[in-house]
Image (tube, rainbow, N blue to C red; front, side, top):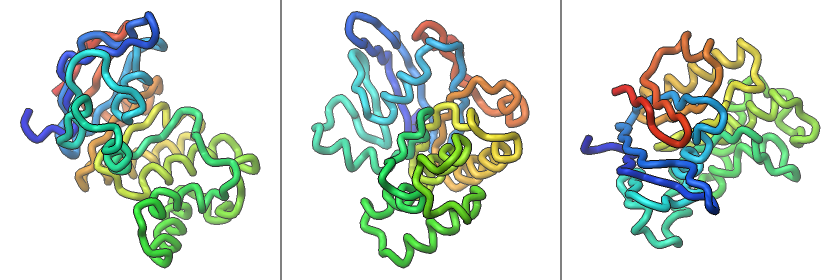
Length: 223
């Protein structure tokens, strides 16, 4: 399992008195794509929050992008997180920013030239079908449009690790298929991708190894 971008060794997570993840051991290589499956309450979102560095394990060892998260100083985590893209189930768009500026934010934080930002963000928003909505604020967008902005923001910086929590939940079938094409291309280019979903149809159409959770435990992890 050397060279794994994601590695968990007997990881547990406690939230208050509740143990939400128990003894998870898992490794995902560079460019690997994994479905994250399981019923509601299985621990999928908690696992994604660990991988996004919102939480630290209560037990066990978590390595991301070659870094031992438990041993890393807290000041090192923001720089590591910039290499991780996240599509949240509730979008988490900044309401005071336009669609364009929401998507541009990761590039500006990374110090990219403004000319490059204008070109890259414009191209990405056109690709997700929002060319005519770039100046709209989140409150002016439908749920599906907000989802597409959130996806564009997560992938604009071509992260080393991309996490997505129900990314097709507000998309129609055509947009869901476009998203899967984009994720497939990112995976081929070396981005490691973990997608949590309840959408059995999209999983059946795009077969890939799966990580299955139940009651906070890993019940199956395909190679």
